[in-house]
Every structure is written in structure tokens, then in C-alpha cells.
Length: 359
Image (tube, rainbow, N blue to C red; front, side, top):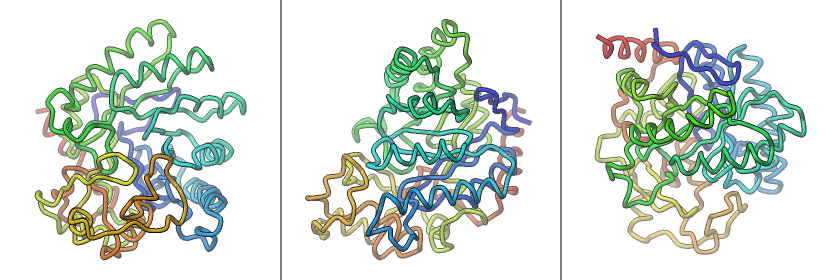
């Protein structure tokens, strides 16, 4: 078994692996429950979660609130394991999604894509047992968040996820720093661990550091745990599982990809993003896409008046397998996926890889 135990304020998964939240509609109740049943922490992505609701375009906020409630309840009906949600700070309906998650008594809220400086107010005022875990890309960010939470709310983060530049989706780094050795995940983990130590000592609370971004094999897990992390967050490798909520065509796009298909794009939200290259992305890069009418302003930082495409619609189309009008976000190791397997088989493979690395 794994040499370290991940403990998040009383919650202790059998396996120190968190399945990263993948939107839109990639990690829903099906995948999250399957991961939780195998002893990991399953996570529902909340961005655009109401995409299948009839009123998604006419009443975006209510559609998302309703869908999130349904997905949390469905996941809970399928597992007694640990469940979380991923709620991006950048979402225009951020507060509503947090409130629904707390009302539904989700175990953990993971929150990044911005600094979740006021997140504790939603659990403190409700006297909620939901744990709060910020997602950051630097020691400076977690230091700022922690000080704010403690001073304003008397709340110590229950854990922290530090995500490196090899992750899929939107990245919290400047494009020129993505290949900079100073920003390698192992260096970021070391810096965050050092920042966290005095906070743990002064508060008497444990704040486990969870590493994310480019972690693919059990060997990767062994390596990063040896550098001070208490657990890992993985997303890309869970895509090609039977239980993943995406279409088969979406999963096959990962299986059929090659190393050169990992592309860094400029997202309308003002951040670089890592995705699987396809004709849609080629058209974007060639300037063939034109500004459009935004169906809903879903992300605060989105330059929707000048953007050549809608990030939400592109991801929704991809989830359904419609790659003519969309693309898939993916981590740097997506091309290594070879076939669709069950979550149970995936965990068995990862454990075997981990044990091999220990020898």
C-alpha cells in the first residue's frame, strides 16, 4: 500500500489520491462515486454543470444550482466514500454553487482559478462540517489565503492543493513560465510545505499538501510523496475510465492522441490552457474564429465581447464528442493513455506502479 496516509481534518481516504474536477461534465456523479468507492476522493466539477438542463440558456444560474444538487445527491446514493466538488473562484455563480454544496453537506470543497479569500464565510455561518481546500500555484498564494482565513474567520485550511504547470485546463502561470525549472511541481511542493510548517505549529492544525499537475503513474506518486506531499490530485488519467461521465468519443480522443497533440492555447478567460490539438484549435490559432454573442457570462475574467469562441460551449461540445465545435482540455501526459478501463483497474495499475517504484 501507499506509504503515507492523507488526513483532511478527520477524513481519511484509503488511498491518498484525489480525482481532479474536470469540466464541463467530465467528472460528474458517475466518476466521483466510482473513485470514492475505490478508496480515493471523488470530485464533481461544477463549472457549467447544468448544461443538460432545459433552461440552461434561459436561466443559467438556476439550471446550474439544480443540476449540482442532483449530482451531489446522486453521487451520495452511489457511495459511502469521500466526495468533493471543484468550484472555480472565477465563476460568476461561484457563491451560489458554494452555498448549494454546503447545503447538500458535501465532504470537501476544492476551490481555485482565483484566490478563494472569502470561502470560509459560507461554512462558518452555517456551522458546516464541509472541509475547505484551496487550490494554488504558489507558496505566496497559500500564505495570503491562510492569513486571511485565520484573521477574518478563525479558519485554518483543511488541506491545500498545489498545482504545477503540467496540468490540463486553465493554468495559473504565465505562458513563459510553463517550462521554467523554477516552477516545476516538486519545487512548488517544497516551497508550500515550508510555508505551511510554521502555520501548522502556531495553530496546532495539520494542513496536508496535495500535489497536482502532470502526475500520471504510481511512480510519480512515490516521487512526489517523498518530497513532502501527503497526497496527489490526478485528473487526466481518469478520463479513459468506464465510469467517466464523458462520451466515448471524448475518451477516444485521448487514446488516439500523440505527444505532439498537447497544445497551449490562449483562453478567452485570460489564462493559458493546455488542450488536445484538433481542427477547432487550429482554426482558433489561425484566426478563423470570429467574436460571437455570449450566451451567458459564466467566467468573470472572460473577454466575451471580443473572444473568438465561447470556452463553455467548446467544452460542452467536446464532452458530447462534437469536436468540430469544441476541444478537450488535457494534462501533459494525456497521450500515454492506451485504452478504456474501469476505475478499479486503474487504481490497481497505479498501486502496482507505486510498489515497483519503491523497490
